[in-house]
Amino acid sequence: MTAVDRRRLADLLAAAQAAYAAANPRSQELYAGASNLFGRVPMTWMNKWSGGFPLYLDHARGARITDVDGHTYVDFALGDTAAMAGHSPEATIKAVATRYADQGGATTMLPTADAQWVGAELTARFGMPLWSFSLSATDANRWAIRLARLATGRPKILVFGYSYHGSVDEAFALAGPDGSTVSRPGNVAPPVPVDLTTRAAVWNDLASVEAALQHGDVAAILTEPALTNIGIVLPEPGFMAGLRELATRYGALLMIDETHTFSAGWGGATTAWGLEPDIFVIGKSIGGGIPCGAYGLSDEVAGAVTRHTSSGEADIIDVGGVGGTLAGNALSLAAMRATLGEVLTPEAFERMIALATRFTEGVEASLAEFELPWSIAQLGARAEYRFVSPAPRTGEEAAAAADDELDAYMHLAMCNRGILMTPFHNMALMCPDTTAEDVDRHTAAFREAVAALRG
Image 1 (cartoon, helix red, strand yellow):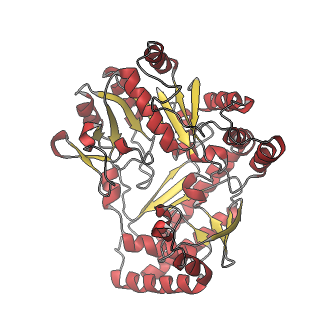
Image 2 (cartoon, rainbow, N blue to C red; image 1 turned 90 degrees about the vertical axis):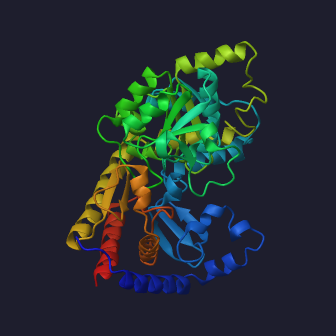
Image 3 (cartoon, helix red, strand yellow; image 1 turned 180 degrees about the horizontal axis):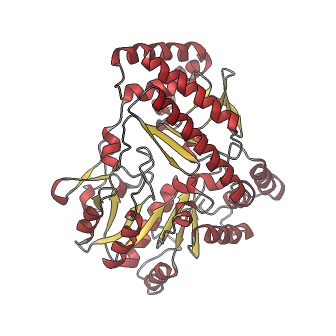
């Protein structure tokens, strides 16, 4: 395979940036005028869009987004998984309108019947018998980590380099030399040195996991079933089963975060791959775009927590550090019930996964045709290409494969052709409204973009 000509890439990128700026004057104007926003955006991550300024949203529905300059895009970003159900699905609209407008009351600190329905549905999908709710997967992870430490009496969490669990302090860690734990580059002002709270291991390396667990101070292994935010890095055969065995052997809990890997199917990778977590976390997509998150506990973990709370040692019903005023609110629960019950159904996942396979095959065909040394990985309804071949097997390998110029070019090349990819990486996600024609449109645009690289 032949490497990319960097001079050609630089010329193509400059042309793509110029075309993007010319096509989006209103977005550029709004960005320039956003002087009261830190970083000129409502949330600093929105500056990740290539092109010097983000597109501004006018409206969205299903698998389509229309910006303020009137351009409509096929959306494969889908809010970086938060809109896996599609933008504003009808069932969720109806449930939210009924709850907020007809019945009234978005948040009252009172439970609703929807909560038990959602809890039972999550049990059916992921196996955990007991559930509690949050407004994001970050909060669910944060609170569940506290419960894991309480249940085990141990202070540290084990994470994998370049895994992603939201803005959880314990998670921004890498395995350093000689078994040490170091802060991930870019980590903003960690409250304490990360090695006080965390041990880090290397993905797909069970020996590194066992070495970390042998210290006897790990409360839980916090992991995704596949790395996602550094590009999809799939587990090798036996790796997830090995984590379960090692956690049990060394007295740690296995805490699985499926906020992104829910794309694997109706019950996520946990059901599809027969995983056995002690604690389970999910967020983003299960509310159809309404902020929500949830964590599930095994009976054994719940019992261990209750023993500490019953004795008065810990407080989970007032100010003990678990929960929030808006968590489990009526509006979020209504949205979750509708989205899980009527939108993200087994039939929807079957269609979405088939489309992701079609997407993957289209990318593979162009990579073969133009002999590009890239690779693509698929995780159910999600697929992602990387600028390296063979595909990375660790987070560290995935990080080393980053190429900012190629990344910017491919994002802008797709955007200028009416296709949105996830801004943080080259991930495409299918939703229930995605069509085969949408996928084929990407296949054609992708081929054009890589053909231009080859000249």
